Length: 205
Ligand code: GAR
Image 1 (tube, rainbow, N blue to C red):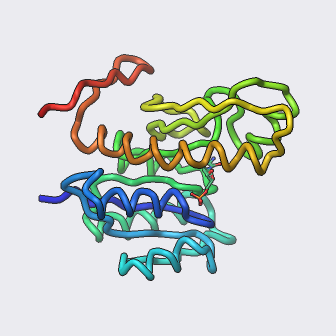
Image 2: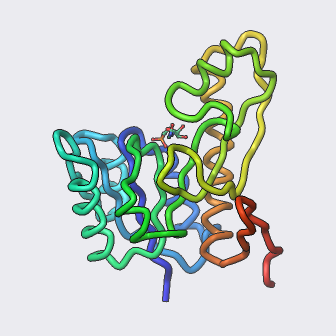
C-alpha cells in the first residue's frame, strides 16, 4: 500500500511542489500525494495542487480557536487516510489534540538552523545578528514552536551583500532538497529516536 502524504500550507507552496515532484518522479517511492490543505483562501499552493490534480481543500482558520480549527483539519486528514502530515509554510502552531492524533507522523520545514531563529522572519534576524552560516531544518512536530527532534539540516553561507530575499532564495533550494530526503527516510522507517536525537540508518537496499 502506498503511504498517503498530506501537505498543510498557508501560502506559496514551493515546498509542496518539491515534495509533489519527488513523489511523481519516484525520489519518494511508494507514496502518494493525497491531500493539500490551506488555512487561507487564495493561497497559491492550493491552485498549484489543483493544477496537478491533487485533492486540495481550503479550511479557513480565521476566527476559530486553535483546537476547534485543528479538529476540522484532523477530521479531513483521517477521512483521507493520511499516513504522514508535512507542514510546508503552514503558519500555525498545532494544538496538543492535533499532535497527539498524529504523534511522530508530522514533519515541518523551517528556514533556519534550529534551535537558532525559530518563528517568523528568520532570514532578516540572521542578517541582523551577523551569523556567517544559515540554513534550514526538517524536524518532527511537537506541541512547541519549531521545537521537535531534528531529522535533517542543511547549511548555506551568509554573504556580505545578502538581503533577506537573496538569503531566503539560497536557503529555499536546500529546503526543497532536504524535505524530500527527510520524507523518504521517515516513510521508510530508517531512523530511531533517542531522547531528542534522530539517528538515521542507511538505506536497506
Ligand atoms: C518556507 O521557507 C518555509 O521554510 C517557511 O515558510 C516558507 C514557505 O514557502 N516556513 C516557516 O517559516 C515555518 N515556521 P513555500 O510556501 O514556498 O513552501
